[in-house]
Image (cartoon, rainbow over all chains, first blue to last red; front, side, top):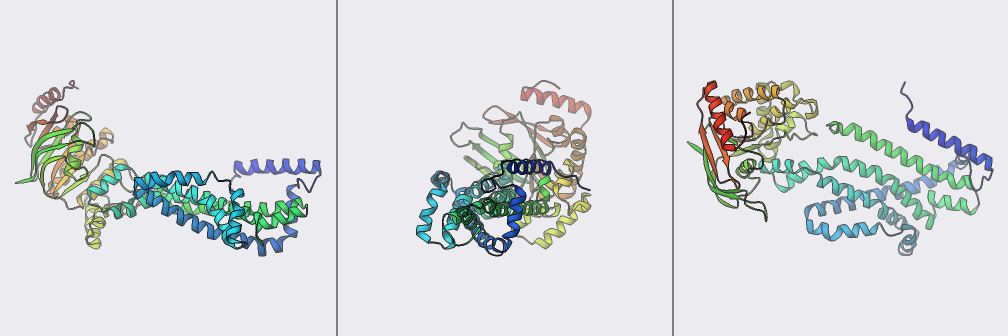
Length: 246
Length: 234
């Protein structure tokens, strides 16, 4: 049988300490203990899983597609032209200095309570690591390989499609693993600030009722969703990138 | 018959001092020509210019079709052996099915048939160089430009591949320019050797070698070449 990983032991210790400490404090509405959160999750399973989880997943799904569309577009145009890179790279970095929770209310003013205000928050957070990673990936193609392609009279398009794109696939998987938790966080922040459904919205509603375990329940669910997707991507990465052992 | 003529070719990287200054030489059909010289003398740059990777700043080059084989095997790690070999065919948009047939023929001929669908990471260093060589052959070029192809290999593998290269070339009717800094390798493989002179590189000292080389001849020539390069006798 496979031995449990060190992460299993460390997280078990973390949860046990949390459980003992929170029970000792006995302030459930401020710091609920893990088993109380799980119990609350079970009690709230119908609204959480049937309604709010799908609202958040919808925003996260649209956001990940848009983050990658934007990230790929920016990475490619920066790779094609040094001047474009010099012109837009600083702007891309600057976007990350914007405190998202502060700017999110403006998006709500623009787009109201539709999904787009939340999508914009999530994309603003997630497109950055996607762009930078893919840009690094395209740049990582070794000069020797490009020279070899040129010696075979390859066109620019062939160098891009047959050399740069496959070299960037590992970076694509890394971006995906980074962006998935970020779009979920972005969606939750957006929902927290203005929404009628979603795990962020649900958490805020529980807050107004001073239901500590109810606040934690959707947060725990977001973590579980993020970890599951990241593990799925890691599995696919191992399956499809066997050549990375090289 | 001459397959390549280089006439007063000069080269410099952007805003840098000249690396090559007005060099001229030629290559005959089916000839094995080695160019040797110390590191940084510009010998690799010469074949990069001939192969179209770098552009000469002045001078003329008249040549039949060339194929460049780099120092490292540079196999694409995500492609299988056969797909790596077919790369030049894909890039030149020639018939893939015909290329595949040829690729399989070469693999069989060079004892790599069973590795056809393996990834490069499953091959030894020597095998990878052989696959890289087949890829170069599949460009259907008349002139092979080999840039220190065996320098990263251990002595035993290197010796085996040198023998293998001579046997293979005798079958495929190719002319070769071989870049090396290993005098023994050049003496063993070549019909003619050009030794790089001066910086910037502006001339060569030429050695014509007989097909059959006795030990005395090799020792004498090696001594002379070492003196030309300005190195010590090994």
